[in-house]
Length: 231
Image 1 (cartoon, helix red, strand yellow):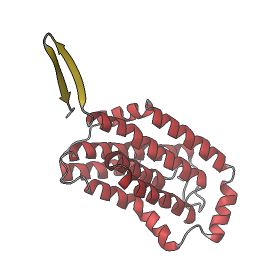
Image 2 (cartoon, helix red, strand yellow; image 1 turned 60 degrees about the horizontal axis):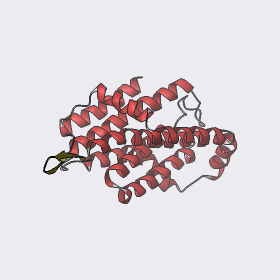
Image 3 (cartoon, helix red, strand yellow; image 1 turned 90 degrees about the vertical axis):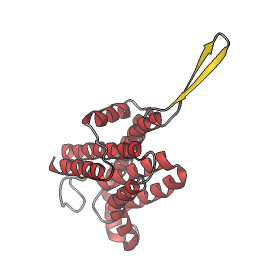
Image 4 (cartoon, helix red, strand yellow; image 1 turned 180 degrees about the vertical axis):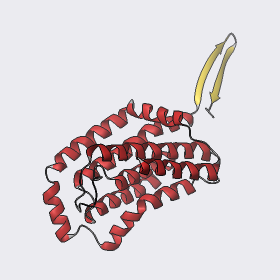
C-alpha cells in the first residue's frame, strides 16, 4: 500500500504545483463508478481476462523461449522500459498552455491514480511470482497498464494522430517486460486491457464535459436553440 500512496502523492503534487487544480476522492470514485458501468470498460476487461486466461496456459513455455532467444533488440527494450513514466510526463506536459488544461489534467491524474490503485491492489491480492523471482507482484504488468492508459488518454484527447503512435509505444513497453523476464504474457495482456479500460471509463466523463449540450425550446412565434458546455 505504500507504493500506491507514493504514486497518488506524486501525481497529486505534480497536478497541484503545475496547474493548481485539486483532484478530490469524490472525482476518483465517480470516475471508477462510471468506468465500471461503461460498456467499453466491461468489454475490454472481459476480453483481457479471457486473453490472459488463454495465454496463462503457455506462459512457462513462451517465457523459456523468450529468455533463451530474446524478443527484441536491447535498445528497443530500453525504450519500452522507460516509456511508461516518460510517456505520462510528456502527456501532462502537452496540457500546459491549453485552454482546457484543467479538464484534461483532471482526466489524466484521476485515471492514473485509479489505475495505480487497481493495478497494485490486484498485484498484492494475487501475489504471483515474477519470472525472474524478484518479488510476488507479477500480475498484472504495471508498466503495461500505465503505458496503455497513457495511450488511451492521448487518443481520447488528441485523436488517432497521437493515439496510434502512443499505442505502438505501449505495445513495445509490454513486449519489453517479457523480454526483460519481468512478466509473463498473461500479465502483459491483462495489464494492457486494464489500462485501456480505465482510460475509456474516465474518458466518458471527459467527453461529457467537453460535448456541447443542445436544447430546443419551442415558442409561440418560433423557437430558441440553446447550446452550452459544462465547465
